[in-house]
Length: 294
Ligand code: GRG
Image (spheres, rainbow, N blue to C red):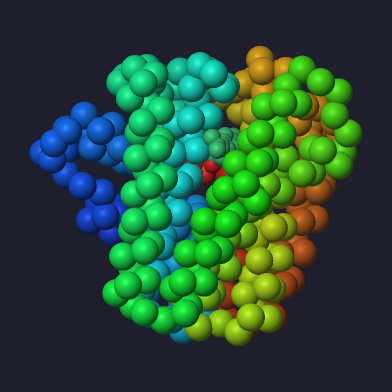
């Protein structure tokens, strides 16, 4: 398989899909739809929706049923980036190679844009549940809403914020990574598996694979924050240091961080191999995520 062209094709396909789920800028009040579209269509690697659709494919599911959930998870991810960049949080000026939402639309509209994307994601999933009826869709919605809220991403962000400028231990750092980053990545694989008709046991296994990929992804993000450039990342480097945040690299050093990314990714790959040839794309994606430069 030519992974690069397959990945590029999946990104292009997904962008056409999500375009159908976000209202047009022509709708009133135009500014909110314009701001939603500005951040959603600013680029981004589309990892979470592609993980979700690939997991659905792995279990032989109907991709049409996965589309609204893949779009919803990208809306949630984009909302979290908009809010994370706000002056009250990380106060960053660039994201995905563009000025951040609050820099373009003002802080008030940026807050509302994050809220709008979150609400719209829930409406998109609820509509899909009504259309498809099956318990697989309801379960996917439950997985995604659970992992993005107080039992996942949101609480990871809370502990991250209250830990700023403080000495934290390894357990707290792990809590932050597991919830802030890994929860949504793991949910992508679980929700995709559910829509694909996987058994409860396989959904659990996909969740464990997602946790490993998610933690490795965050450690790689911490590595890139000190080794990459703003041009390549499309967001400021050194942002963690600026915000007095303890990262995997500042706690364990660069060498151990690189080793752990490799170890976790290899563990995820071994678990994926059990599914045979069908998991080839997910396997290649996992390898790409550890070698990524942005
Ligand atoms: C505001 C509730 C709330 C949560 C914010 C996800 C998050 C929590 C903040 C984003 C900042 C950050 C660095 C989070 C760690 C996860 C991470 C590496 C996000 C970036 O994801 P990518 O690399 O981004 O997939 P693109 O732009 O490619 O989609």
